[in-house]
Length: 165
Image: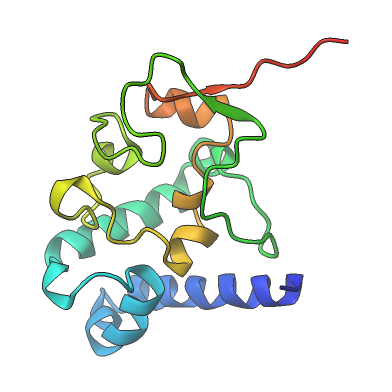
C-alpha cells in the first residue's frame, strides 16, 4: 500500500476518535457499525460494554494528548504502515518467559490489563486484535523499545543485544 493510503486510514481513525471525543461518545452509538469495524470487527455487539468503553476511550485520548512522555514511547508518522505482529527486529522474547510466544493473554502486566482495556474478552483474548485501529495505533506497535517495556514492567520482551563488531 502506498503512504497516501496509510495516511488516509490514520486520518479516518483520528476522525472517529475526534468525533467520539467532541460528541461525548454519542457517535459511537450513532455510527456503531463504523466504530465496530474500525476497532473490533471480530467482536459481537454484546461484547461491548458502553460505559466502560466510553471511559476507556476518553482516558486513552486524554493520555495521548496530554502526556508527551507516553506519546514519545510510540513514535510513528501518519503515513507509516500498520503493524499487526511484534517486530522482532529490535526486541526478543526473554528466555524466562513461560507463556505462549504468540500472545500475552496470561500476563498480569500486559498493557491491556494495566490500562483496563474494555476490549479484553473471555480468557483474556483481545477483541480488537487484528483490527485497523490495532495495526495503525499503539496496540500493534508494542513493544518497540525499552521505554514501552519499562512502562508496563513487561516480563516477556527484552531489547535485543546489539552486535558489536
